[in-house]
Image (cartoon, rainbow, N blue to C red; front, side, top):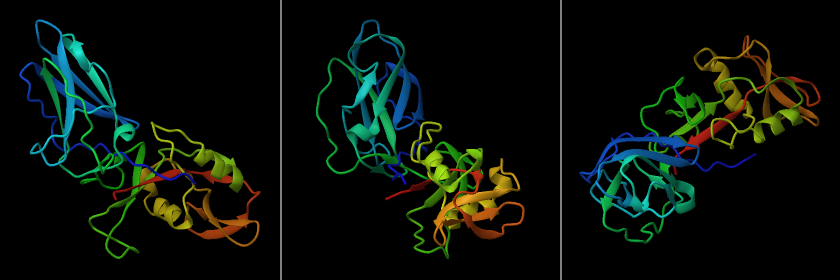
Length: 254
């Protein structure tokens, strides 16, 4: 099973730009990168640098180093794009006040102000059925769950469609482990408990049939657990049998 390195870019605050020459900014996540589009209005090429704030624009960190595109010296006026490869520069960037700043000037200082954390890790206000990080939110941790922590949301994200309508248990695991979907590669076959969460919210998530679905939870020798999605019954069957497959991934802020 692949381990997750999460980069959730539900950036709740608007992109902050302080340079008067910069306007019309937009931001979006593409896999583990952040793409920032902006319009530069200058008569001559100038230097562009990108900064990030974790506290709502009180303290800025940068200039960011692992950036590409229209950044650096002699950037021309017009519609431009900067791409920040977050995981190459930082491990964890945690908070709900993440903001970015594009700076236009005569030059760019170099240096890496990140010494501890690495990636934007935000989950605020999502609900089951919302599109999120490459799939559909299938479950959000709540009071009463084992190890529940309101400050550390645990979110199960389901692929929006089945990955197979007939695969053995071994093949089902491989299909999910090898899956690349919507920029994410950390999908896996859900555990018995996670599969049941998908069943309980199957109409909200959508795309399920009334068939049996594999879980990754093993039973007796040569068997594994399944759940049928017409009534939620659970059973163990031989791993060589073929049943439906729906991949999941998880999001958890650390």
